Image 1: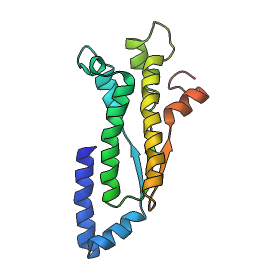
Image 2: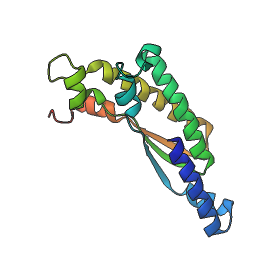
Image 3: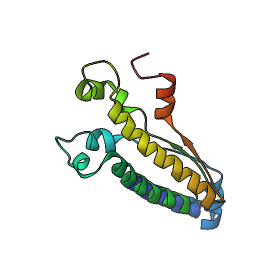
Image 4: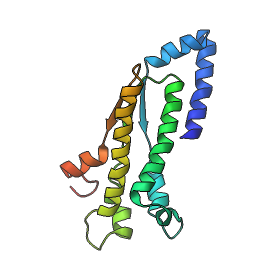
Length: 162
């Protein structure tokens, strides 16, 4: 996300040039809705791949969720500093229900990999808390959290297993 934020910063500069000032650019950006849907690569292609990456041996699921949420927090503060005031954050999906994860990390059944979903829910809980904190701290902004994993698990809307 750091590279995306750098690109956004470049775009903000271009908007400022077109509108005539940084202030006018920020006014414009305050009206925009930012939809932030981070990917699950930090889990699928890192934490859940112990044969290739040491991350799951270095951190418990809760510690890893903390590390990632701290990085995410810094990135979201940067986004706010660049002018974002209406931000929707989408939590990670139920990756333990992805067919690949079920076939490689499952217990031989067609059910979801519960350990993976629990790890995702730990991260999502931290992001929800982050949103609550930002809504108290950044009074000029509104942050909304969508917990897609919990919604899928609660309603049994699991990909490929309806």
